[in-house]
Structure formats: C-alpha cells, structure tokens
Length: 415
Image (cartoon, one colour):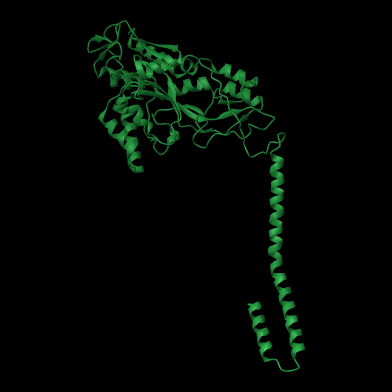
C-alpha cells in the first residue's frame, strides 16, 4: 500500500507541475524514492536474516551428520544393525544358552524367565528390555481322535470329553501355578485357566476359568459317565481303560520346563489320583523326544497321546482359534492338532475369522472359550506371562536400542 500511494503521488506531481518548479519536483521525487527504498530494505531484512539463519542451521546439521557417520562414533538414538546371526540350540537346557551369553558368544537372548538365570544377567549389568504381555501360551494338546491315525489303535480315554474335563480337575489351576512358579521362581510367568491368553484382550473372557485341583469332583464326573474302580484298573463301561498300557506325554529334549514343571506335575497328579481311586492304571508317563519328531507327531503321524509345547507369535487377534479348532484344519500338517470336530466350534471359528463386527467376534470368542473349558477341553492350557529380552552390555553401543514391541513381546518376527 505504501508503494502504490507513493507512485500515485509521484505521477500526480509530474502532471501538475508549473513552469519553474521542475527542479523542486525532481528533488521531491528523488527524496520519496529514497524513502521508499529505505522502507523496503527495512521490511525485507528479517526475511533475509531468517534465510541466513536457516542456511547456517542446515550447514551445522550437515556437519553434524558427517560427524555421526564416523566409524568411531555411534549416534545414540539411531539404532543400526548391519547383520544378525542366529544361533540354534537344539535340545539343550537353558543353562547352556546362559553360559554362552555370559561368555560373550551371543549378544541377545529371550528372557531369561527363570529366577536364578535372571539374577545372573542382572548381576553382570546386562540390559533388560521392558516387559510386556506376550500373545503366546504353553499348552498340552490331547489327541482327541477315536483311533490313532497310523496304527488305528483305539484312543480311549483321550477321545472322551468327560475324561478330559475330569483331567482338568485332577490337575487344576492352583497346582499348575505352583509348578510353574516352582520352576521359574518369578511372578511374571503364571498359570492360565483359559485357552485365550490374557494379553489378547478384548477377546479374552476373564470370567471363564478352569477349576482348581479337586479329586472328588474329578471322580464324580467320571463315575457319573460310565467309569468305575471296581477292580485294580480304571474301567469304562466295565472294560479296562488301556489294559496294561500307559498314557504317554512327550516334550522336546532340553525343554526342562515340562518334566520339572507342569507336564511332570500333571503326570504326578494323575498317578496320585489313581492311588486315590485304589487302582493301578493306566499310569501317566513323561518322556523327551527330539523336536522334529515331536512336530511330526503333532502335525502328521498323530500317534501321540499328550504333548507339551508352546505357541507364540499369535499377534493381537484370536484368528488362531480357527486354525486350532476348525474341523477343516484336521488334515496332515494342519493345525487342528487335537482332531477336535464340533459344529459350534466351526461356527464360532468362522465368525472369528471372517466377521467384520468386533462385537460379533468378541461374542463368538467368548462362546468358544466357555464350551472349551466346561464341555470339550481338547487341550490343557498351561502358562502365559510377560516376556522380555536381554541385550549384552556392549561398550560399542550398537545393541543399546534393541527393544521389544509394546503388547507383542520379543518372540516375534520383527524385533
């Protein structure tokens, strides 16, 4: 506005000047022009200064970036890993892995969850990543089929849902917790009484829970459904259950949690229950096998009775319910390990997998959990917990930013 006004006034003076006033008018024009230039210079100066400052900042940032790229400086806050090498420890106990970590042979481990091993890494000053609920669980799949898949041998009593429900009373949540804590010695590993881990809210229904140990109720269920202890062997419909045989539980070699924790605890409780009934069998046994054989038994040959194993990387959603319990996945190398076939399970699993309504999925997951715990019990849910990783105390600083992801845990494909 100032410049337009000056131009207008300058033009008016030129057209209205009188004879003898040319010099005065020219001086006035020059004066107003100088004032205009001075005003313009004053207005534009801050912008010029700002541009100069930004240019200086850019130069400083460029110099700082060049400095941080030095091979002798690690710029904290910008994690960088060029290569990651994974070391496999098939069939070894956790103590061996811990020894290698403390000796500097490996830099990053899961856990440790056992209290004695945890104290070792704390005392050595290694970095523990934040704990977070992990969408995973330990469980004992039960072969629910009427016959073994390869040998066609009868599979009783595992194919009887009444027997499986009774087993959940023989080995209840309280004893699972005692055995889990007895092994780990820490509060962040805990027994579960629901097939959905609590990290998977809102799909997890906390009101649905397996019972605590109760031999009386276990026998009430069995005796009301065709079982008797009239001889020295447990019988069903007046026939010996697995005459002369055993119920065998398998776990992966090196997985000491299973025989020293809940799998061994469940076998001990079952055998104590037989003593409570005054019968000799069938006894429950626990034995190790190599991991590849275990997986083949679980997913292909399916001659097993009960297996101790864990599932992880479940993510935020319960779509794994479809994989583990829909009848269509009971095929070789399918994920219906237990061979469970139930039309309501199929209906709820379809809703969980395909329905776009959150409320419908929550309702279906809740219905599935309720029937699982109180009617079918195709596997024994055992343990879940908080997970974390330990990173070596590395003076180079290259490992300081390896952290787990919130509400997903370190045992995932992205950490």
